[in-house]
Length: 440
Picture 1 (cartoon, rainbow, N blue to C red):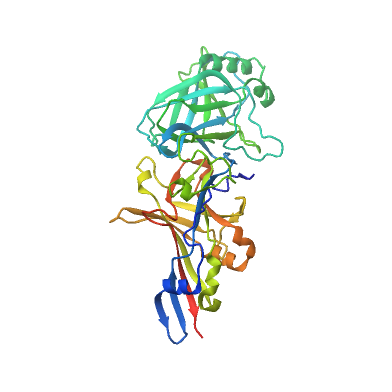
Picture 2: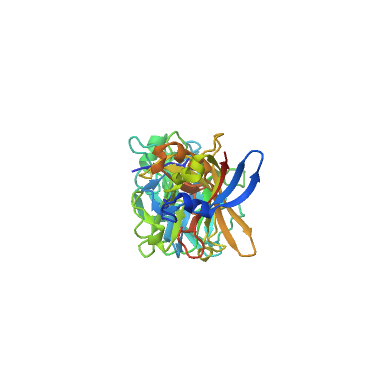
C-alpha cells in the first residue's frame, strides 16, 4: 500500500470502456481529413473512438505535513461529512519570566492564509484542547498523514464562535486562565527551563471544529501561528502589557499536521476504501471523483490505443492527443467550486505512483479547467496525454499503467471534482487524437 507525500498532489483511479477494440476498417470509418500536404504526402486525421476506461479509488493515506493548518467541518451532498482538525506544538521565545511578573491572560492567534472551502457565510465554532501525547513521527516515518491522530484531553481550554473574515489578518481565541497560569508559573519558578521539561507538561494543541458544524474548512498559516502570554510587572512605569510568544515548534521533524476525515457511509462513494479497490464509473452512476485531502482520485486507462498500429500499416505517428472530460454541473456551486488545474501522474497496475507525466522536454504535464463555453455553460477538464500514449506505444510495461489526477495543493486542501464517466449519457469522456499519416 502506498502513502502519498506532500510533493504529490494525489487522489483516485479511472476505468471504464468506450471502445474495446479497433479494427483497420473501423478506424478509417472514423477519420476526418484535417489537411492534405500533397508535396510531402502527409495527411492529418482526427480520431475519437479509442477506448477510455475510468474508475475512482482512495489512497489509504496521504501526507498532511505542510505549511497550512486546516480547520473546519461541512456536509457535502456527494462526498459526505468532511472534517479537518489541526495538531500543532509551540515553544516559548525564552524560558524566563521576571520574578515580579504577574500573569494576565493567554490567547491563541491563527493567521488566515486565504484558503477556504464551502460556506464562509455560515457561523463556525473552533475548539482548542491540550494534547496528552507528544507530536512525534514513528520509526522510519518522514511525514504525518491525513489519517493520523494524537491523544487529546477532553477539556476544552478555548472556544470561539464566529463568522470567518478571510480578508482579516488572523483569528484570536482566548484560552483558559488556569492553563495559562500554570504554564506561566512553571516557567517563572524554573520548573521549565528547556524544551524537554516543557514537553513533560505541554505537548501541543488540537484545533478542531464542533462536531455538529456545517460550514466551511479554513486555512491558517502554520508558521505564523502562536500562543501569547500577557503579563504585567507591578510598579512598572509602562502602561502597556508585557507579553511573550510561544511560536511553532519548527525542527527537522514536523510538529504540526492535519487530520482530514471523510464519512462516506451514506453516499455513492461508501465502498471506496483502498487504493486497490476501484469503483468503475459505470458502477458509480457513470461518474468519476477526485477529492483533495481525503485521497480520492480518478484513474484513466487507454486499453485499445495500440490498435493505432493498424492505421496505414503503422506508417504514421501521434501528433497531439487530449483527454476531454466534462465536469458535471449538477455537483458544483459557488461554495463547492472547482480547482483551476490538475497535476497528472502515472500509476502502475496497483495504483502506486510511478512519477509525474512529463513532456519529452521534461516539463510536468498539467490538465486545465476550460470554462470558455459560456453559451452552453459547459466546463471541461482538458489533459494533454500524447506523452503517455507514446510511452504505451514504445513500452509494453506501460500497457498496465494508467493516469491519475491531483488538484494543486492536493494534500493541503479539500477541493473536489465530479467528472462525467466514459459512458455518461450527457457527455462521454473521450480521447481526441490527431494522427499524421505518411503515404507512400
